[in-house]
Image 1 (cartoon, rainbow, N blue to C red):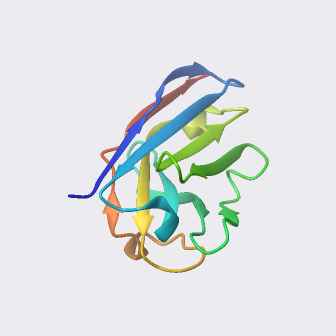
Image 2: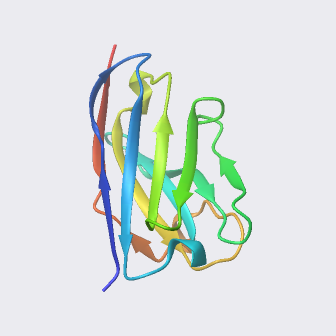
Length: 124
């Protein structure tokens, strides 16, 4: 059984930082493109960052550039999202997901496995 379990969410003031973790089991992080998605209140889920299984390269949504970083630890089968300079508009549920596609993918339909999400609330 494949499981992705996010943790690390919470309440933070604008300008603060959070580090989200995604514990992966049932698949190997190094064999899948891994992504983080954000779902703001009342809105759809959107891709934020992705890390390629092929070469570890990453891609970012414009909203994340310069502030968020994705990384993975293949030995621990973990994926991380470091979020700095948080803004109120970053509020929402953050999901970790795994895609079997080679390379960088940001589309929801390209992801096969999803976590249950972790809530991030940024106060102004």
